[in-house]
Length: 550
Image (tube, rainbow, N blue to C red; front, side, top):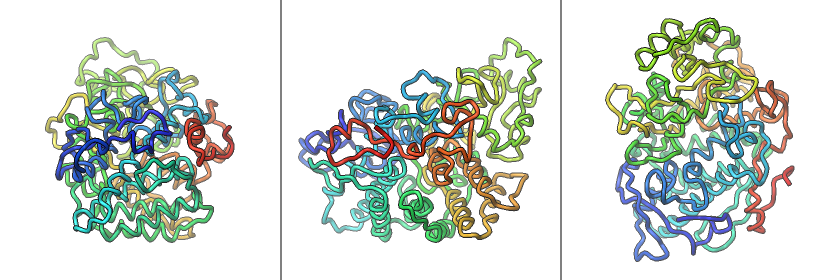
């Protein structure tokens, strides 16, 4: 299906469902088009697999050339890249090096408008995926065999997840449950919250038990974790908090068959779909493969976007040199930035550092490797690089001019924990843990804290896994929001957490370049929600603009 305008997004006459013919493994994607308007049959298995594939690919021909969304930049328009950008680039965690790129200054400084294209990209992608889910559900309506009932439950879960993204990002959604020419209606706030809650409740019985689903498919634990996430944010979405239910459903996930990975870095390596240590924590991954799912979103974006040519062990031949750490994020691991391992200003970088071994030797001599960073931070999660590969780095900058204006983030890797070769030298095999067990621990910790209880146990469980030398003794609100960053930085969720804590737009918490100021400043509160794209306002009479936007 190609979609040029948002108005056309929900038009059955223009939708061609794209799918793969795979029968079991979501990772084995061989995308080919199936057009329900012209085809003689409905490929149930193919369309079902496409429902998951849309999380990690952008079209049906691999890298580019036949995108899902016509009229959009294919590399920019994937599900994960669009949601990631809206939830990470405006926050205290990272900066985009190339501020001249379209809409990037607006994301950096939290100053977007209804005409911003990046806002439109995520809106269109979410709507496109929901249309595909509606098509599958309409085609399988009334079927009662066990496999179809399970597939329908999983597709309804994915649709509920997409409506959650609409609720979280926009506060409302262009809502439809069926594949038709009718314009979607506006559903927002409590009404959309209640719909998502009811959907998750209705489908739970038909989903796999925890850890019984094929890796890459949603099970009951994914259902519970999305509900815990919904309840934790209830105050934002409805004006009425529900921390008791957030605690209840987080506890269900923690009490399930999932376990914490004992090595934090292995969660983000190329064999996280084969390494049992990583798999036992990952509840729902976005499947990625360097040969079969090549695209410019997904983990390619996360690995290539955080590397520059010259960095040792890049894991890719193509460093885009785009995303680096804000100074405020580094402070999550170093309260005093003077303690960050950095190359002394009086040390010159010699010429001839051309190989990984040569760069490693120089970095080791000056104590600026990632392993030196981890040791200095006393936390295995401090996967940052301050070495000289690709150039001399700063911790913070008074002008955003390039990739070395901050520390590099090397959390996402295209290397295997077992040392075996990866599938492709440029495109990663690394699956994206969209849901993982650690979220349940921090959700429960926050819910307990909000109810006046002792949340130290769950936080310290994660710190123990990270070999953190500092255990929390007293939980504060700032400690909690900082812990969310330490555990989940660069995983596509930060904005949502900051909004929930009342810190995203206010002067309660400032970070470098917030509001466009070097030391940060507050912005208008209406930026807690993204605007409805002007193209949809113009084409769908049922949708209204969010307050504050013109």
